[in-house]
Length: 101
Image 1: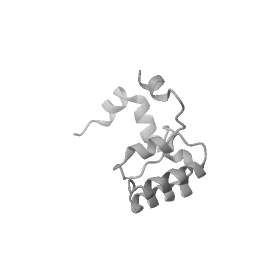
Image 2 (image 1 turned 90 degrees about the vertical axis):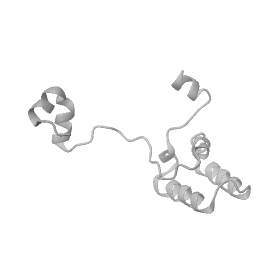
Image 3 (image 1 turned 180 degrees about the horizontal axis):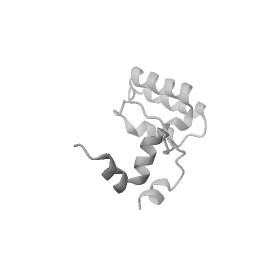
């Protein structure tokens, strides 16, 4: 679909300005990997206070066979390179109730 530049500017002035300025205005709060096979571990990691807790959880799930070594390595790499909050903001008690109700 093609749209006239003038019409686009009239209908979406803020978006037009942002696209023309080549400057991103949206803040990124977390980094996700391409892996989506197990979102539950991400929810658990988001509840952690420090990296040691994340390591303990990953090791526990690997011992139980609930987490593949490859996916665990991807999580550990993300933790090391981007930090704990790259998995998302801290989730506290009542977060989902406040956020989605």
